[in-house]
Length: 254
Image 1 (cartoon, rainbow, N blue to C red):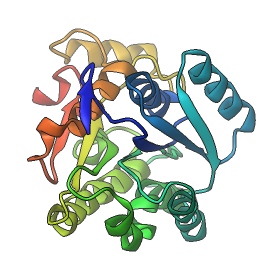
Image 2 (cartoon, rainbow, N blue to C red):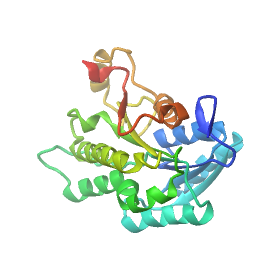
Image 3 (spheres, rainbow, N blue to C red):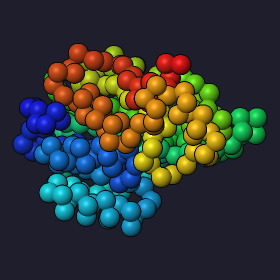
């Protein structure tokens, strides 16, 4: 792998981004695509949104391919990785950005929905764990999971996804140890409230309070989160294993 404009790429480099057709996943896909990677965009349900994302990245000059799979189900995650093995034979970068969120008070949880959120959070790394060692490129492979500060701090209504992201971060550490010997680095990026992800808007009063507690004076952007993901994929980051980098404008420091 060589680095172009700060992102990891080589001619024919292959990157899979789960949840790559919207939000942070789309921002990551744009970053990798602009740098020259062939980006495989995984999505589960929104066909129209996926086609729009594919068209946008293609018009920007990227090489992209849609791959529909419900990675919250074991069979979906396994089929996705097996399809990549069959078409490309390897995977240089895996960014797991897909997420599912069902807000509810902690004392009145949606049990089934919480379990579904957890399945999506750990899906490709847990269900696909047995395949990742063979599929990821030895020596330069990168796995980056997108987590949330809700894995370590209490956010109202966020218990289900907070628990899911905490499990994801634990899985990142265990996989990092297992795959480090192959030269595959596994890390995570924990995002705070992201300003330009339209889903789950923060109420005005809550956002005002958040901004007062944020040293940067504003929420992070999806582009900033994607930039840190790209940093973890660079050759210079090969010594980082099992780490969680936080992108929240410094809010978690206070």
